[in-house]
Image 1 (tube, rainbow, N blue to C red):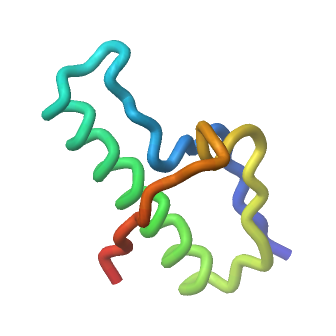
Image 2 (cartoon, rainbow, N blue to C red):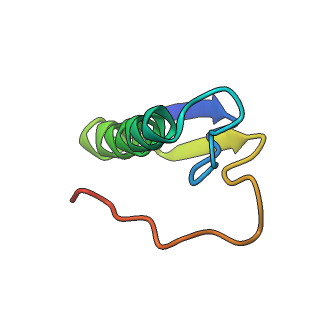
Length: 69
């Protein structure tokens, strides 16, 4: 049985603490793209579950994330 374990994804984080607004926007896109690729990999490889340890989001309030698929 296959599982994927990941941690602290922080989708929709502002990312502006150490990054400019433009770099933060790019980083957010990279993180969302990586998450989408992980899910696609799981589907394609018969992974039974994805275990996310830590935070998927920074806050309870998130924006409408646009998935590329």
